[in-house]
Every structure is written in structure tokens, then in C-alpha cells.
Image 1: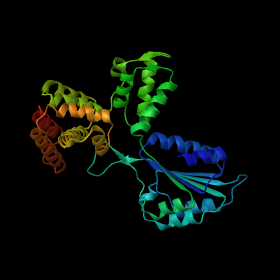
Image 2: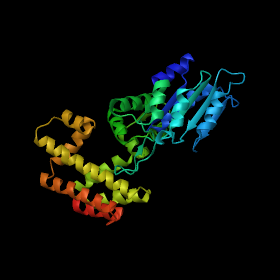
Image 3: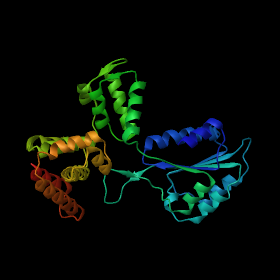
Image 4: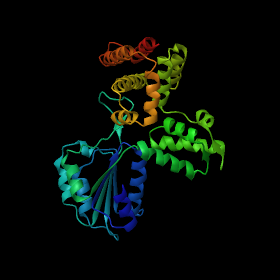
Length: 338
């Protein structure tokens, strides 16, 4: 990303850019700034191909034509899927671009189609294609993904400061935990907080709990927390609250299964006397998450956790094979947990 921002600052542009990843907000922000600086609103020397199959001969003819009263002709290709095709003509076009042309490829994430999280988004760019390699050779490819760990925490802190509000240490820790992973959704929730307390207002834990709509994984964490504590009423209430919000039951099942597997992993690693730092590194989470998980595992027999993990995976398989509906699987698992 820094390389693109440097090009915008200096006005020294490359022939080709590819902006892609799984963070829609960053992709939109960077690509809009880049395209604005490249085109300066010049529609005569700009060709935009969006959400449709691009034709190699069409874009080549445009870039091979000399710009009219401008330094360059610009092609913006957005969500055309050319990086998942095997058409070699696009790679050949990029390799022979004249100095009077620039191309910007923008690829937003698409819904995952594999056996992973049904709610997740994945990049639509195949790095093995000749076109991707041609872009790397002739310009730059920038992958913009969701912020994680310290980078995400620092970004949230900066955004809170920018809104001129105060926040307690405990409230900030909770906010980091509950904010949606997608930056655009997180910004919306922080705007709600700032509007609620007003300029120079103070945010405490109760304010965060009252105002912020927590991300699904946090809501499921609370659901699992109730379930493993044998609070069946609360567990099912939280589940039906999610259903009432049109949350995909398969997404709920995936997140419950993930939490159970994480609980099982923490219990196993604690038994081997691994530190919280080691466990956090192995699971790819922050240490405070490990501490929360460990607090639950200390009260649950290891054999019960292992059985839950096996049953969760079996139910997931039953749904995918068509033997159970996703909602039936979630309810069966909750009954088993409580």
C-alpha cells in the first residue's frame, strides 16, 4: 500500500496496478485515490470495465491509441475476474503496454466457496496466472487484507482518538473484542459510539455494551460461554437472538465448532504446561482470548471437551452431506453442550 501512496504523492505512476485482498474498505479507499490521481476526471482518456467479462482486443485497442491532450490513457478494470481465467491475451497485453497507458485492476473479495467459514470472504485473484506474474513484472500488485493483532488494535485506538472521545482501559479492551473485523463495519460502530457520548464524552464498558452491535464471533463466544457453564436457557436465548437477526445458522455452527476446537486446544496445551504466549501464537489469537478460554477449560473435564469436539465435527459433516439441516445441528450441539 505504501508504494501506491508514494506514487500518488510523487505523481510518478507505473504502467499497471493490481489492488486486491479481503478488506473491501481499504481496496475502495486506495483504488479511488489512485484512479482520481491518474485520470483527474478525464473521461475521454479513461475506459472503465466493471463487473463484466473484459475483451482483450477492446482494452488493447484503447491503450494502443495515443491520449488526446493528456499524458496517458487509463483503463480501470474492476471485478472482471480476469485473474481467475487462463486467457493468455491479457498477460500479453500487459507485457506490451505503451508508456502512454496505465491499467488499474481492482478485485474485491468474493464469498468463500470451500469448506471453511460460510460467512468469510476470500480473494478472487489467482497468483498462479500468467496475468498476475505479468503485473508483478510490469507494475505492482498490492494485497489489502483485514487488520489483525496489534495493527488492528492501533488502528482502533487511532480512530477513537480522531473522534475526540475518551475511553477507559477496560472499555477499550472490550471494544477491540466486539468490533466487527471488517473496517467499514467497525467504523460505523465507532461513529455510533462517538455520536452517543458526544465530543469529549467518556466511553465506559456499559456504553460499549449498549451501543455496539458485536461481531458474530463474539456473540457466539458468549453463547458458548453460557453453554459450557450449563446455562441452557441463556445459550438458547442467545442463539434465537442471532436467528432473529437473520444470521445464517451454518455460520453460527461454524463459529460454535471453532470455539469448541479452540477450547479443546487450549485445554490440551495447558496440560502440556504451555504458556499463554505459546498458546496464543499457536492459535493465532491475542493472549487475553487465551486467558478467557483457559478460565472455561479449567472447569470442564478434558474428556467432555474432546467428545464435544468430535460431535461438532460430525454434525458439521452431517449438514454438508445433507443428513441434517444447519439449524437442527446447532440445536443438537447446544443440547449436548448443556
